[in-house]
Image (cartoon, rainbow, N blue to C red; front, side, top):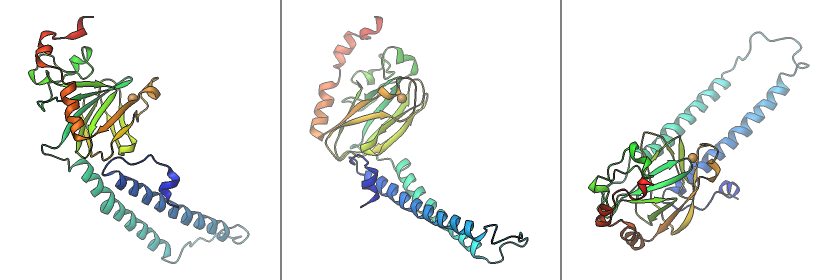
Length: 259
Ligand SMILES: [Cu+2]
C-alpha cells in the first residue's frame, strides 16, 4: 500500500498535481526513515550511557570519526534534496509562467468572507482596477475604463476551461486569505495591496470546492466558493454569455451603486 493511499488526498485534477503528490510521498518516506533511524539511535544512547554501565564520567568523549561522517552525509543528502529537487521544482512553478494566446487570465479577489473572480471579457483586456472602487463592485473595477466594459465579475464561482493553462492573479481586499483549490494542488496567499499570480492546467471536467487556506476571521469556515472546469467550447460560450454588453453598461454606468 502506498503512503498516498493512507493520506487519502482528494483526486488530482491538474497536470502538475501528480508531481506535488510524488514530492509529498517522497518527503513522508524520507521523514519515516529519519524517524526510525533517530529513534534507534536514541534507544542505543539510553542503553550505552546508562548510569550503571558508566559509574564514572568519561572526560574524553568520542574518539572515532563515525559521528562526523554521519553528520556530513546528512548535510550532503539534505543539500541534494534542497538544491537538486526542491529549488528547481519551485523555480518551475514560480518562474516558468505560461505565455501565449492559449493562456486564460483571471483575477481572484478575496474578502471577508468570499471570493470574486474577474475575467477580462471577450476583448481579453482587464479594465483598470483600484482599491477605491471596491465600494461599488467586488473586483474594484473602474466603471469609466472602456477596457472594463465587457469584463465579467463572478462572485462565488470560478469557471475555467479544461486543458488550457490558467494564470490566476490573487489579491485581497482586507486581510490575508488564501486561494486553496486542493484537487488542483494549488494554494496561493491573497495579500491586501499586492497581486500574486499562480498557474496550473486543469485536466478534468467537473465541479469542486474552493476554500480559504488562511484563518481570516469569524467567517473563515464559511468562506467557500466553487470552481467549475468545462470544455474549451463551453468556456468560450460562457464568456460570451456572461459578458455585459458595452451598450448596456454605458446606459447604466453604476448599476446599484446609488442604493
Ligand atoms: Cu479567508
